Length: 278
Image (cartoon, rainbow, N blue to C red):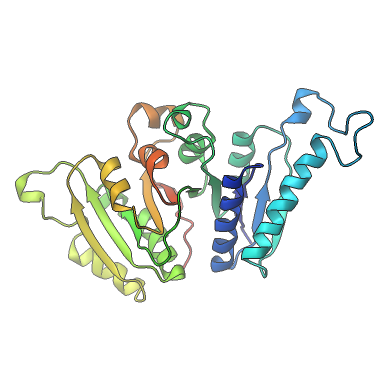
C-alpha cells in the first residue's frame, strides 16, 4: 500500500508537517512514512560520539532522535496509523524525490521557504514542487478548522487533475470547496465562472457530500489566490513546469503561493496522476 510520506528535519516546522501528514494518512487509511535525509556519511565526518562524550552523542544518534521524535508526534495525532521511518544517506532533495516515486502524497514543512531564502534555486520546497513524482503538500501557516479547500483554476484544461485531488480531500475532511479563477479578463468575462455549470454538476454528482462554490477574482493570480486562501484549510494549485528553474523563471503561480500563502499548499503536477483517492 503506497504511503503518505513526510520529510522531516529537526525544526518545529518539520514536526508540524509530520502532524499534518499523520492526520492525512489516517484519513486516507494509508501508512505514514517519515523520512530524514542523512547527508553526513557522504562528507566523511565521524558519525559516533566524540572521545569522552556521552555514548548517546554523535550525528548518527542525533539523526535517529529526529526520527523518533517525529514518530512520537505522529502517534499523538494518529495513534492507529502504521508508521515507518527511513534514514537514507544523501541530500534532502534527492532523497525525497526518490521516495516520492513510491508515495501517494509527499509532505514537507516550510522551513527555508521565506520570501528571500525560498527563492533560491536550492530550496527544497521549490524543487520538490516542480519535480516530485506525486502530489506535494507544503505545510505552512495554519490550516483553519472547517475552512474551505480553495482551488486555483487557470482554465478548464487543468481542472480535472486539481478537482480529482481537491474533491477527494474535501470529502475526507468534510470541508467545503471553493473554485477560484484569478486574472485579467475583458468586461464580458468578468462574471464568467471558473467552470461551466455542466462540468460543475458532474463533480457534484461524483462527490455528493462536498459543497462546491466558485468565484472569479480580479488581479494577479498568485496574490489573488493567497488572499482568497486566508481562511482556508488547504490551497490547491497546479504546476505546469517540470523543472524548478523553468518554474521560477516563468513566474509560476504555484511557486508564488508556495512562498506567500498562510495555509498548507498542495501542488499538483498538471497531467500527472492526482493521487487523491476517493
